[in-house]
Length: 310
Image (cartoon, rainbow, N blue to C red; front, top):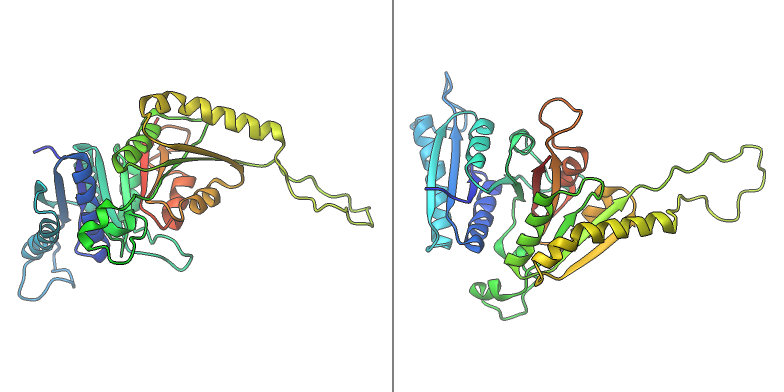
């Protein structure tokens, strides 16, 4: 059965959070969910496998536990379980190619208040031809919504408003797949779309060492009004056809000077989803995530979706 949403599980709390997030996403899309677990045979049993179990048995149990948890929370959802004997990256990239969206877990927040993105997640994001969402450990369905008022029952949480979707837009490489994903995500949630574009300020000229008196105004790089106006015009032009296609989605645009990563992480502090792009072509050799997407994946607190595009 074809499933629009696929989630990779490995028995960790992060992958279980990802499985439940993926189940909610499948419900929003009105489609099925494929739960995938990849395992490998080893000459000697892996240390995490109990002495009285085979690796295959342990893999089956890991997959079944995740499926049972999701089914209990989403009894009406169509779920397919897939146990694959292959390298995790290979198995997940192949599973993603048959779907519209792949969801993976991230262990949680690191020492720098960001995602701890494992090597498997990083390589899958870099190689997948489909959008990949990373969901941090500890995230629940309630985190997709604004805080509920006192007295709201758990089953009433889906009725509270969704948090906004944030789109990081590079006006030099606007991409239909990226923009449409963000608009569609906001439409399905019935929430706002916040489009953020950051541009770099010109470098600060070196000060004259012969000056004895310091300047009266601090020498901070300031973006001129022309650069700001050009950025705003480019954002509006890129979004115009999509605003017409999705007239029910409220859109706000923010154009500001600064590092893209810093601006995006700040904009997504109270968001429900952050959408960024990953270019699949360019001068660099091999699969790569891209500097902005890579950094955002490590530092954003909300789920992050990376959309590949040319």
